[in-house]
Length: 237
Image (cartoon, rainbow, N blue to C red; front, side):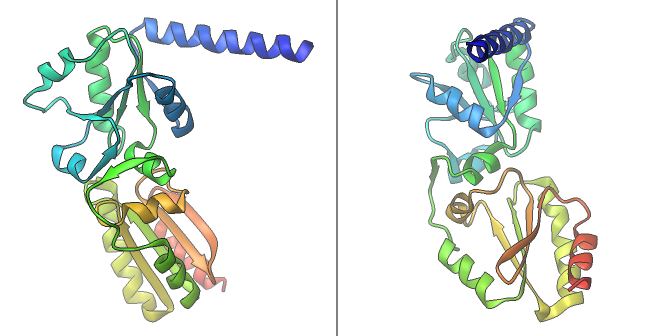
């Protein structure tokens, strides 16, 4: 009975905090499971993909509409939304989502949720998505590469991700240094979305995974000090 009362009080506190936050016209960054659950609780969820139209055309959350602050039809798109209902926003990272959320908050939208990790988290978490292409790399092929190479470094990202671009020269440096000893795989959302979904362990772009004999030695959500981490991992083996 005490546990029931405690859970009820905790739920009430969370509910009141949520009301307080949204009454101030703010948005909330939420993790994938919470974002997904809230969407599923809506009959006709208002989902906004705040990326560019070229990105949206390649892949997106099913049911999403596409616009951001730079869209020519921005005012028309905003007018079509119901400010009294929750709005769910995502992009490839937090920047464009945050800008759009701030603008909607100024226009008195009551509940604004931003997906932490953006489209990387959604697809990387295995949630349903639309794609207009077939993945170049399959999960079976991915596993085959792991089984045939002792050391494998996997770079998972997107050509539209600014941080992902900074990984490329580091990868070239590692290729030069280690040669055939280290197999490097580069997987981009725009080329192989399904294998990213099948892995079910990608939360952000870039995601870097280092394998030895098919087992994960380290996984990095973001760039960090990748070269040092790889050097350290290989030096100890």
